[in-house]
Length: 335
Image (tube, rainbow, N blue to C red; front, side):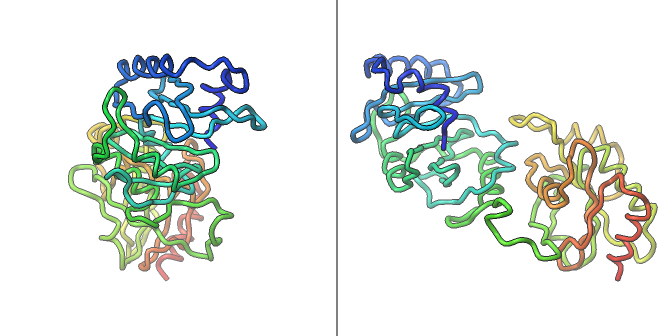
C-alpha cells in the first residue's frame, strides 16, 4: 500500500523493541512541524489501541506519523496506521489512476486512492492509511485529525486552494462516487472511436479555450509542447482544403515544474503570434488524455487528433507523421 513510507521511516522499529518513548516521538514531531512550510496534521498521541510510535520527514515536504507496532511483510514492515502529510504533486495527480471521490470528510474534499483515504486541505494532502484498506476506520480516524500543537477539534479543516481542487477534480471527478482514469484492464476496452473529455483552459492572448465551444463541428486538435504544436498547426493548415475544419492547439509543458507550472505569459512569449486558437494546459490532464489515447511519448512528438462533430476521435497521428498520413486523416474527417 503506502510501503514507501514504511521503508523510509519505520523499518528501524520493526520487531526490534527499540522505538522511542511516545513522548519523545511526539516531541520530535513538534520539531518537524515547527520547521515545516505547511500545517502538519496527526491523530494525537494515540488512536484507539495504536499509540504514536514513529515519525519521519524528507526533503520533499512529506511528514509521516506512524501508529502501532510495525508488522512484518515481504519487503519490509508495515504499521497498522499512518498519517502522511505532503504537498500536492500537480504532475503526478494529473496522471493518477484509480482514484475515487468520496463524500467530504472534515468539511474538505476526500478521495480513495492507493488503498487509503486522502483529504485535500490548502495545497496539501493528508492521507490516512490503514494496512487493511479500511475506509470506514480511516474516516473515523480523520475525525481525530488536528494540527500538531493544537487541541483536539471536530471543526472543518481549512478549505482547499482553488488550483489544487481543480487538479483533484480533474483526476478523480467532482462528485462523490465519481472515478478517475482506470488502468486498461479495470474498465471496458474502448470500441473504435473515443470521446474527448470536456476541458477549459487559458487561451494564449487572453480568455479561455473551451472544448464545449467546438462540439457540433469537425475539429483538428494539435497537442504537445510549443514547438510540436506550432509545427503541427502549420502542417495541418498547409494540407487542408475547403471546407476547412476548425483547428486548435493545446500546449502542455511535459518537463516543466510540477509544483509551479510556467505562467501563460511565458508560453505566449515562446509561441509568438498564432493563427488559430491555442490553449495552455497548466494543469496538464486535458493534454495528457490525448497522449495516453494516442500512446505517444511527449518527449519526442506531439499529437494531431481528428475529432468529428460528435466529439469523438476518428483518427490520430504524430506531429512528425508523413504528409500523406495527415492528408488522409483530413480526408476522412471531411466525409
